[in-house]
Length: 601
Image (tube, rainbow, N blue to C red):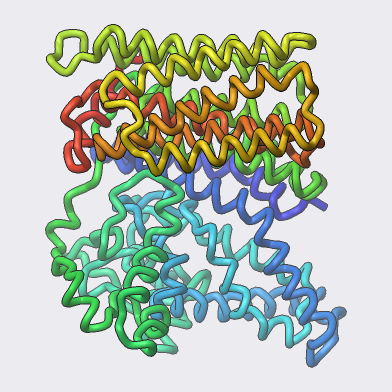
């Protein structure tokens, strides 16, 4: 029997066919129901919900199975696996879902998870797939009555899947009112009401399959043709970032809880209805009054034609990768699943950032290639690793070239010398990557990386005075000395002591100058560069310990992930500072926009 994850994979083509049909119908009616970035963002969150469920279902099904097996009040499996039992279990599940769904709108900590599903300002079938990745952390509590009643875990899982799949079709504006059906079942009309932020529609129609629960408990509202639904949340997300979509409400609750003066208010923030804030917090950190007309303005950052093609191809690749991941996830080791989950998450974040204009498509490719290089190294997929590792630095070089080309006539044009130094550092890094992949070339690889760090040192000194931050210099020097002493006393070969000493000295100087530069410039871009230099030190330290002291578990993950984070931060920070020499915290968006709009070719 297919696992729930495999059933989702098998159902996915049906979802996409129905989405295509809805899109075609909307075009025929003269009103396009889809915007590319919004649809991809919603589907991206659906992908993240399913891939993260590979890990969270161990919690939800594990607890349910334990309660059903050891604490259930009734054990009548024969009944629950009969036709009447299946029907009753489905109704029972839908009843529990109603209360989970309702509390998800009435308790802030539950809303923090559920809000993901409501963030889109569009209402179409892609919105149905926009699901939370954190709902399972507390949602399992609402299904314990089924476990206490002895509903077998298999029956619970199947009726839960049926309830979830049913709700897909109700997320559309192409199906109007359905008469008597609307009075008994959740249907497009009454679920549109549920997604609306209009005052008259707010927090209504929670039913999953049956709408009769809302009629019984007083939460039903009929859609009024005279007042069209306005979709979204009362606090628009305005982002395509799948991680921010999942944590934004939690972050706001944590902020309000932290700043509340009353200990009781610190707890109430999480348990009160969404929007409730302690009086002292609301006074110090006021929010604008809800404006329905402002919510009618659709968030839609401009996307060039190459970026639209890039997003479409990238998302197709992500869907394919997700299908493979989900199909084998239940049989794969946990560590393997975590690695591929991280690769997919990196791809999703990079795609969202590119669509939003925060990074260029070449930077997105650099990040994705780096994630694949790291995973293929950790899983010993050598042929693929030999491709992705050099490809990552090639994408970095193209990113630098494309960005320089985009400002060729601007007074903010990056100096040729700075661009050349940055490109040289990447080229030497590329050489080091290639050498370390080949047997017997460790010393040439070390020399190549040494030259890369020298280029970075000169680069970081080109627009800042040398080593003005004495605390950073002394602190980083102490770290470098301690690391070298550790290597010396734990088996560093005598022939490597001088080369490693030189390397430690150079990389420590690079990090010290990066932080000194940040102290002088105090910009977002200089902070990125300083953080990148610090990641470089961490990466090289782990590499040295793994090679000269003792093998470390998952060393490839720690070494390569921190290495690619370092390179990406330095490249992004340097390019940002070149494009906007006067950049401070507020004007940073100017440089970001130029970076994002660098030509694709």
